[in-house]
Length: 223
Image (cartoon, rainbow, N blue to C red; front, side):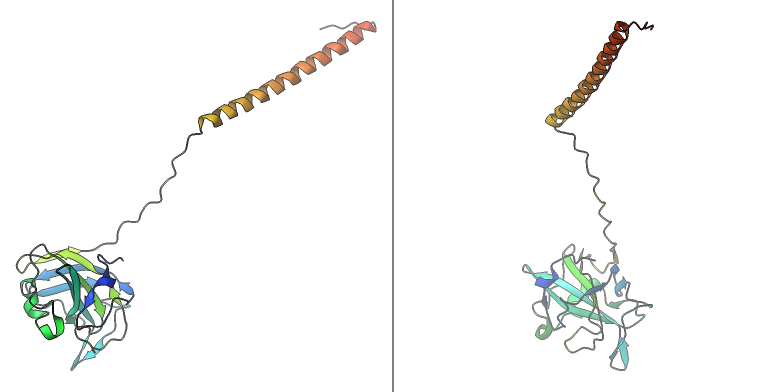
């Protein structure tokens, strides 16, 4: 799970500095709907889900963040809190500036920046209540940061994020031997053939010598 931008260079506004938190959750789906943002990730439901933390009379399970590029610099804030089982929250994307980061004392310079259609905007989820500093947190874990083109109007717009396909192990390409290697091999073979022929010649000469000796001794030799 790899961040789609350099999260270490993002400025956090009025939320915990989660840049160093380990990425333990995979964000697989983001839907920006007229009724709010909907997310799906693998630490959302049991078994192994992020724990609930206290919030007022209830609990919060996770926070959906938004990451904006303003004048060439990325800024992020914990935008919307979700309790366990909440399907969507935060209102339609056309009103994110009004609903998510409206207070300049907490979220400037993000305040008032409504993303344009097609603008690159980042999102991630973190465990616990991270909308403001001091929110309850039990585990310091987050998802990868995803970057999507912002929709026009109130959507709906669905984005899905799958693991990158595994990179296949390259098969080494056979390297043909260099010309000098081929020549060396041929010369070695020729030397071996010559050596075997010489052994044959020596054997024939030895046989002829023995035959001549037998003839000289009066032994009749027949072939």
